[in-house]
Image (cartoon, rainbow, N blue to C red; front, top):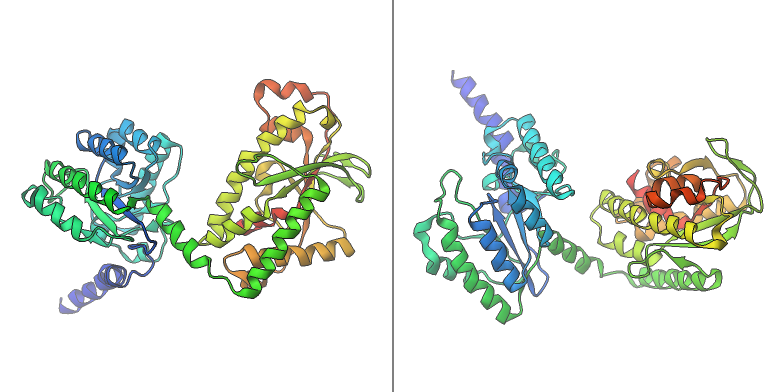
Amino acid sequence: MQTVLLWLFYISSFYAFIPGIITRFFGYRVFRRGTVEGEFALTFDDGPDPVYTPQLLDLLKRYNMKATFFVVGSHAESHPEIIKRIHDEGHLIGIHNYVHKSNWLMRPKTVRLQLKRTDDIIFGITGERPVYYRPPWGIVNLFDFAKNSGYRIILWSSMYGDWRSSVGADKLTHRMRRKLRAGEVMLLHDCGNTMGADVQAPEQMLLALDRVLSEAEREGLRSVRIDEMITHERMSSSMKLSLPKRMAVAVWLLWEKLFHVVFRLKTANPSDPMLHYRLTSYQGQDMVTQDGLRLVKGDEVLELHFDNQKLFDIGRHARNEMQIAIQMIRAVQKDLPTIAQRVLDKPEYRNVKGLYGVTMITRGPEQFGFHLQDLPSGLFASSTRVYLKLLLSVIHPKGQSRLKEGSRRMEPRMLMMPVEVLISRYAPRELRSRRSSVETGLGELSVGSTAKELSS
């Protein structure tokens, strides 16, 4: 029996206590504090609550402050209208398990099921998947610690005992004012319907928060969402580029501007430039897509080019490849419909056969309707390979180290989309019939699409 108890102690320590201590006291693999001047983060656990969360949202709106809500899935399921309001008013929604239960008391599979169920509830209401997770009481187990959940774990830098009514608004105000400073991640509760909490405790919290937000406003401090705070942290650190790299980037962006002028590129969305394009004629070797559609020399095509300044900004501020890939996917989804609309509206695009280009993508573009094909060997292929590798080394968070990971994935390839696919996938439904008689073909997506390779 003594041996069994000893083994239970070892297992529980490895599964729960040691990961908890490392994350809580050393902040390993969690985010709990910022450093950027002028901003702090309000975070609220356990909601939504039908009485207190709407009052809290009114208060935040009055002071024009943003917050992060780590919601309990069962509460969100019961009050979808509040979740929708939180999202619509510009606040961030994270996960706090489906039920408010410690991860130490659940198997890894149970925790994953709770996360997925809550994720699906939030997505069903808002249309967006949550990215951030705060385990109840901030208690993580070995599998949370190993990031098996796929979510970024958020803890806090200060909490105030606001789940107890007996603390009172005056004492809460005093405690919160002492911690009101840039970088602070404040933990508060907008619901008292969990074990150990008082049902009416949020009433005192709201009184105290009103006073603290008034003081924050006077001091020029603003509350931001956790994702904003994390982004600002990365921006602050990524600004510190070496002199050679700053010079290389300056030359690269100057070339970008000259290229746009010389080749008269148009922009899909000038207010948020990502995709640029131009009408040109195809000058390469004859090609045939998997659909049997043919592109020959002289066919009219569109070239699409990613905005290099935007790529550079995304690459500098992104934490990993997945974050870059998500932003690139959103950009493609946003701008291709605009280009499809212009193909239908502009007479000069009447004979365009499609989109064609060169990329280092080997996985992923098919979801947008593109075909991949090997680039014929020669001077163009060699020079393109060099340029794309240099580009990737600049925009990628890992820099040069990324270039050593998988030689096959770093080879440039042709990327093609028939114009009929562009229209059928991205044009407004009521306008698709306009091009029903157009012969389908191919066009160009430029070497700037390198960044999408980061998802592979």
